[in-house]
Length: 82
Image (cartoon, rainbow, N blue to C red; front, side, top):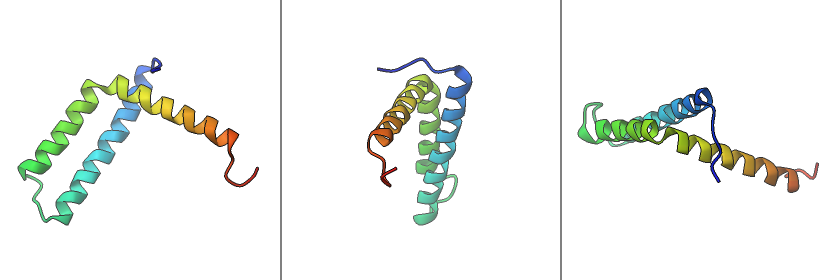
């Protein structure tokens, strides 16, 4: 179940994901010796940014739900026996 996310929080999450996606695409370009203006690089960055802007609230809600789930799981099953 997705919860409502404050707009400022959603913007911060989407900006962080956009930076991470851009850096990942850049690493692929460096690995395969593609220029920054290669259609694959430009399309990937533009597509990721578009998807994050268009579906930002949904993505942010799911990410916050995952973090809540992980926090609850860590409380139930601590790693170090705390």
